[in-house]
Image (cartoon, rainbow, N blue to C red; front, top):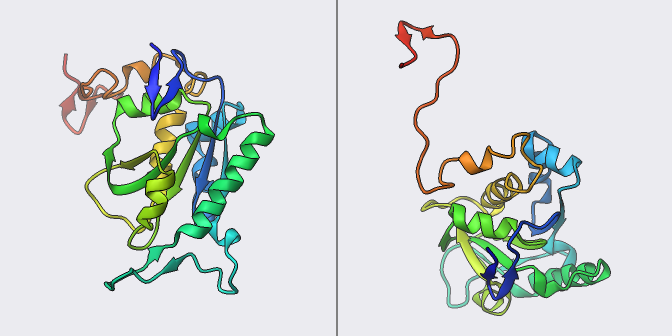
Length: 217
């Protein structure tokens, strides 16, 4: 059923192909995800594509600095808005070159204070033709950038990790496996845990008896 997500029309069926742009200062962390398993096979089948954008490439100082001290003091550092804004602008220009308007792809920021990711959100995201993910670092991102450019902040759990790259990879994996043709058995996604709000029961395989314990009737 068609609907709207972040004010963007969500088609009633999943887009035939998805493109994901990821803003990260550690793009080398992301490539291993794309080289294995379902995500790799889906990319080989041209079901989705990924491009990483390093904010350091949009700095103007010799140190390629993307962070600064928190205004008003405090521990840690905060990502400055300038390089992120320029990276997002470059993504928009690249999209225009392909005929896809920048407005067709929401910007999601991975952050512990965001909306908890669930199957319903992943399903809606997988229906979009494009998506921009922002992997923050340090103590966070200047709120002015978030207020101006981020459509939704997303959390993968009540935990704090060193940066948004791991949560971004989790989101990418969850989205890609819902794309038509990503799974060898098209019914697998519909039978997954959470697809209908319930967890699956225990699973068993051969041998029928292992360690003195039998598979239940």
